[in-house]
Length: 317
Image (cartoon, rainbow, N blue to C red; front, side, top):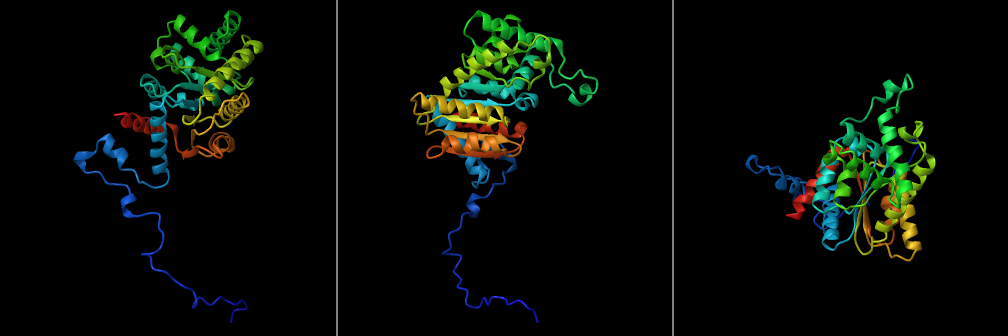
């Protein structure tokens, strides 16, 4: 005999599954494609119409609708996006007029510049840290830091524009796969948002703190100018920035609203390998509270961005 009394279930009332509200039926399942119909369009349409499958379709619709209505589609990004080879896909979206602003942390700018100028990036940190040479590539530091000093002295351009101008003047051999260069060629704002002390160029003798701070501050104001137009539509995408871009976006949004711009009624989406606190709160939830919609997608950038890009471009046809 047990010392503990078990509840008697004989009086439980049951219902018919036919009258029960259910969320999934076979029509929502993924579809197996016939061997002769494995086109990209058919593949994309084969995704389950459940949870993230539906969310991704909804996000793509938001992006396409925003561009048709001339609303902003802003891409915020971290360095990993460049390191895993996604620049050509971002540039294709620039070519097609999908992206209206690209905002990146300064590590992403470093990888973009190194790729454009020298065709190589992403050093072996573990190996180079052992002898103190990590982040000490002279050419990288001098190129970027001198561009910022010159840009501060010459006029009102910001961090991203100064780099774009120097890449153009230097005839960077890989400029066609440089996000910074191609944004400039398409007259799309490209802004770089630095936190001093976080990047390899900050540890070199060519570093100028005043120039770095002033140039990234100018880019913050350019970013706010884009964010203010997120009214009754528009989309903000965050790929792979767990701290810098979510924080910058939240401040840019509050400045826009403080100045009287009705920046609301837009969509946001965060893409990363795991969910982090700041993107969740500062990109997905807080900016869209009471209006708009925020989306979460977890997965590797080198899979998720090609998937999103393909769906956008297929939807345009």
